[in-house]
Length: 100
Image (cartoon, rainbow, N blue to C red; front, side, top):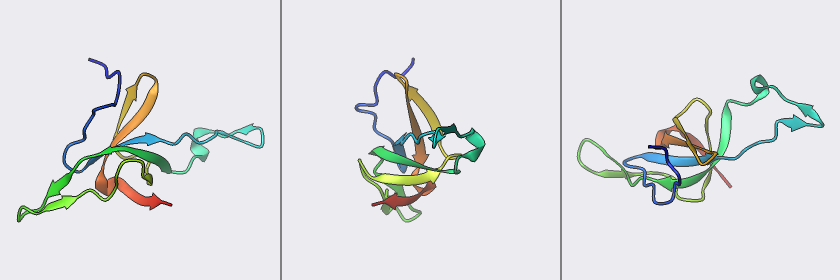
C-alpha cells in the first residue's frame, strides 16, 4: 500500500526521516550531470525516533530533532516517495553534521 502522507509517521529507535533539500542542477545556465554532485546531501529532519538502548539498557537519544538541517551521505538510508516528494529514512549515525 503506497504512502499518501508522512504526517503521523513516527520513526522507531534511532531512525530519522529526512526530506532532501533539492539543490539546483544548473550553474550559470549550465546543467550539471549527476556525477558532478557532492556525495554529501542536505536535508531537513521531518521526524526522529526516540533513540536506541545500549547493552546496559540506557536510552541513547537521537542527536537531531524536527526541523534541524543536516548533512548526510547520499548513499545512506532508504528512499521513500510520498505523493511525488522524496524522503529518506536514515539511522541517526548516518547523519554527519547539523547545519546552523
